[in-house]
Length: 218
Image (cartoon, rainbow, N blue to C red; front, side, top):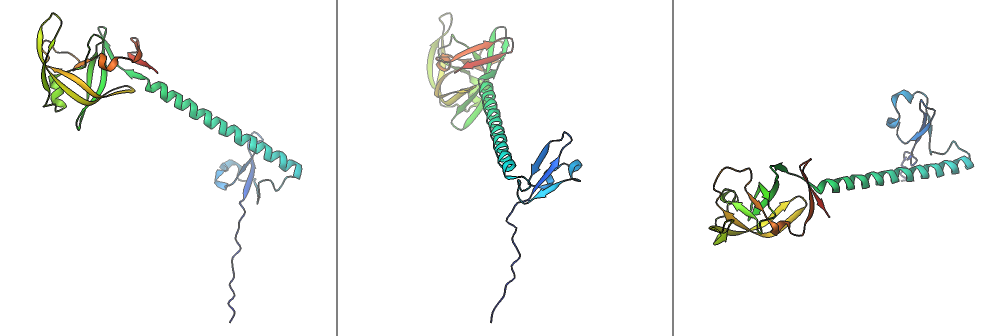
């Protein structure tokens, strides 16, 4: 017994459509949905994009399409470069608050599993970063090592020493950061400690007082 199977013909060719826009420019698309409704009344279709052209016209059209494709690709890469440069520039800016010539900076601190955002006073006169005791409590620092420090005026105070997993400010991260913990006394302040030279040393930056920004240099 012979079994005959009728196979439906398979269309292996893509269809292309040609239309003329209001400016008289010819467009080729590979899908009817890409043609604006206003231009769908008078269109031509082809099994191949260049079927309606002579051999010489076909060569010229292919070269023009290749040139246009290169131009579009170049524009895409240029836009990507511009976007990447803009993102890099923005990453080198950190918004701060400046009051009475005091620069208050937003930082992220992590101690074990606890991460906390805080505001520290940028202090180039402090050799080590200092946290107020209430901030240390928020970070759940309970095992600081007791020590002593001399403050302005020669007074000796009791402090705690602890090691954070990191301090982050802008594009920079200081890992395994040792900090001093003190109890703040006196009038209320807008910051929760001091960001000292242990973090700032070696960093190049400008403070933009008008726009209240730190501009980092890399």
